[in-house]
Length: 231
Image (cartoon, rainbow, N blue to C red):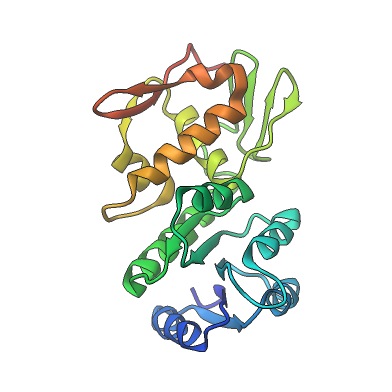
C-alpha cells in the first residue's frame, strides 16, 4: 500500500483534511486539489489508485474533470455531491464514475468503499481470469484487453458496466441477489444501495442492445446472465 496514492478534490478545506486524515491512517498517500484545473494538473503528474471528486467546484466542475480523466485513464473515481437525485447519479455512472456518495456522508463508509474499489481495480487486471475471453453468440468479451464487441463492432461500456458484464460472463446461468452483486462487483462488505445495482443493470442492458435479453430479472431475488454454452 506504500505506493498507493489517492487524489482528493474538493473546494472545502475541511472535507479535504477530514478525508486525508481517514485515508492516510490506512497508509494511503494523499494529494489534494481545491478545483478541477488543479486536479487535472496533479493527475497528469502522478499515478493514482483512486480519485475522490466533488462535483460543484470553481474553475472546472467535477463532471468535466471526470470526462477528461476518462479520455485517457480507467482510474477509479468516487463522485461526491450534495445532490442525490437519481438523474445526477445516472449521469455520473454514464460518465464512468465508479461510485457516487451524497453529502453529508460517513467518512468511515467512504473509506470502506475506497478500499473496496481499489481492491477490485487491482484484481481486474490481465491474468486474473481463468479464461482470457468469452463468447455468447456474437457477443465477445476479451478479458485481457477489456474489449467487448457485438458482430465485431466495439461496444462502449463504462468501467463498472464492464466489470458487471465480466462477472456475469464468468458465472452464466447463476442467480445473484443485489447484495451478492454489490459484494462481488463493487466489493462492498456492508449493506449497500441496491439502486446502484439496478441502475447499472439498466445501463448495461441498453449497451448490449439485442443481447439485453441475456440479463434476466429473477423476481424477488436479483438477476442472472441466462445464455447458452460459452464458446
